[in-house]
Amino acid sequence: MIRVSTSNLYLESLQGINADQSAVLNSIGQLSSGKQINAPSDNPVGAAQASLLQSDVTQLGQYTSNQNQATQMLNSGSSTLTQFINVMQSAQNVMVQAGNGTLSDANRSALAAELQQGLNQMVGLANTSDAQGGFLFGGSVTSTPPFVQNGNNVSYAGDNIVQGLSISQSRTTQIKYAGNSVFMDIPTGNGSFVTSAASGNTGTGTLSIGTVTAPTALTGDKYSISILAGGTNYQVQDLTKGTTVVASTPLGNPATLAFDGMQMTLSGAPAAGDTFTVAPAGTQSIFATIASAITALQTPSSSPAADAQRSAALTAALGNTQQAMTSITSTQAAMGAQLSELSGYSTVTSDRTLHDQTEMSSIVDLNYANGASKLSQQQTQYQAALQSYSSISKLSLFQYL
Image (cartoon, rainbow, N blue to C red; front, side):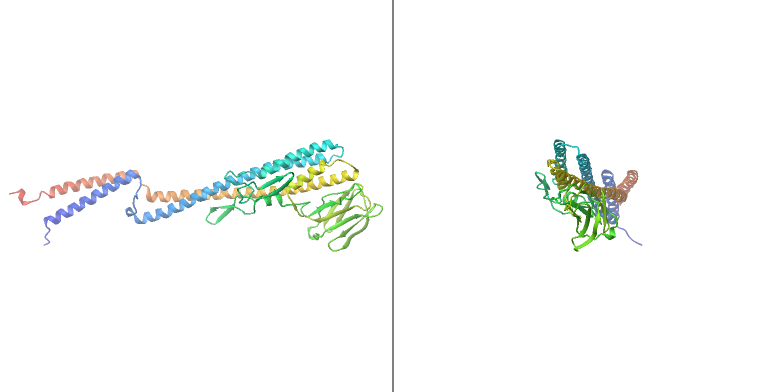
């Protein structure tokens, strides 16, 4: 027979009461906080899982913030480029209008003033602030505007550092574009080669910007087109190789010249001794292009040859402006692609955040209905334990003496 002392019986009863009381207080605490886990000791495994989920949610929150910032920056950049393109289109219209041979010097001067206004607008747009203490097209430079205008000469004072933000664990997206690549390094001519007339030409001949007819036949060499004695024939020489590409050939009016994968039109009446050059395309800023058109329009008409030089300058400016239009539109398209990508990442991040928060809620948050029911049962058990102890504590021989 096992003998149980009265003191052991009392001790076990008190321990049961204390355990029931602790359970009741714990449930009250859960109902008060709305959480199943208020301390790691409440559920060590669940607390560890919740901590990992919270860390993931915090990281996802940073990605969401970066995505929002990148979206704002790229939207601002794209909007600014839209305005820039609109100004370029207006400049193109002015240059086309300026090609009218019946205009007077005063008319051309008025058109030059319009281009001047457009140039100033372009510089202002290129210096647009990013609303965060920097500039949209200045790279990492924040202390001064990236484009400096001195008369009609515009230089780039920014840098080429590409700035980006992490929008996921494995993806960083570019949020700004260096102004040097957007506005300064624009291909000239038709993008493959550029045509020009010698400044000493005495005739009225003008050479079109030309087109590429056979890309594989392009040599990248520099060529000279010479009008031969009598002014009725021309020849083409490859200055790089020192060879004659087209021997003496009669001129038409206009004359279509085709050689080494290139084709262009020589119009007007070139004089004997006039020369034209065809060279590989280089780069030129859109600001320099507009400035060249302004200079051409501000030059008074003095002779048919000078008018031809002005016409050639305007033709070149139109071609270069079209190249800038293509280049800047491509940059804007790249921004659009990034914005589309950001939208996709934003959806994924939002879904993952919701999933983690739901998982964490199932571990940490309290179901109030279940919690209230559990508390009611615990309180009943606690009251029963108290009553049982009260009854047991009266079981003594002294009660019957």
